[in-house]
Length: 114
Image 1 (cartoon, rainbow, N blue to C red):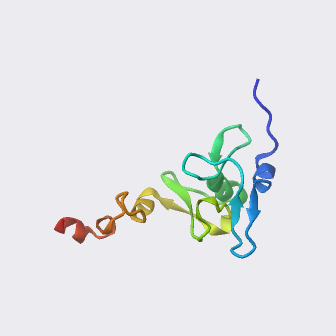
Image 2 (spheres, rainbow, N blue to C red):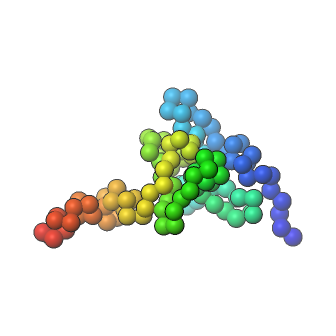
């Protein structure tokens, strides 16, 4: 028998604390292995708290292949939709030194010179 959960939007709003200084909504509940917030949607599936914030709370569309990421200094815990945006995987990779995010990831000329 499927477990019954309270409405996902209600649970979302009960699962963060607001940082008064930064206005970040800091996720205070379940985290995935990388430290990002997660919750069960109304279907009972585990979903990213950031993705839920953008789609369900802010009503924004996230294109296929894109992820929700923060544009603030709140780090992985921030789920304030005003502090989130959707970006492609290549943009995320370009920002990560050591994960293909070296200068060559954003500068094709540098890649050719290596």
